Amino acid sequence: MTTFGLIITLMSKNIELKNQIYLNSNLPQIQRYSRVLWVGIGCTKNISKTLIEQGLRDILTQNELTFEAIAGLSTIDLKQEEKGILELCQEYNFPLWFFTSEELNQICVPNPCDLVKKKVQTISVAEASALCAVTKFSSVFKTDQVLNKIPNYSLIIPKQIIKKEGEKGAVTLAVAKLNIE
Image (tube, rainbow, N blue to C red):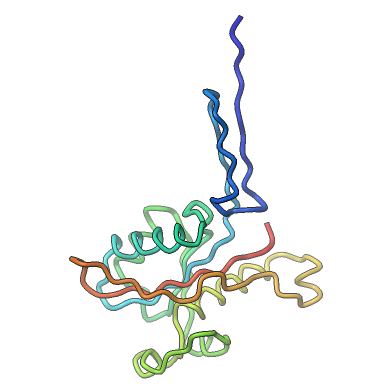
């Protein structure tokens, strides 16, 4: 007699890789991840999709998070035609939200930058846009947290500046997490 089965791991409450349970089994396995991470992106002009994706995968892995939990990407409206960002969103079907410098300036961030302010009239792109996106997305939910004005999100990875040998430019990434699933 042959026995068939399937192991399903739901990663809805905890997206951290370190808490995954790997079973020694020959049964097929399915893993489901809640898409709760919003990635803010700041970058130099003409940045490659490869640099953005490699940098993003690296910082997520370093923080024991998974790429599959990304809900979407965000940046400043000046990057609406940035090919590398658009290609990444198209390949993975990520929504992409743009915010004006005025909107980004309303967000309190842990790592403001005067150099960024001189270039794009806001003290933050990556951190501020990640927080703007998660805030905008969380407003869709009518939960006790939202109704009571309790923050239901957090900046879990502050801005990280990524440069790679052989790649032109740099990308700055920050990740915010929505605490509602």
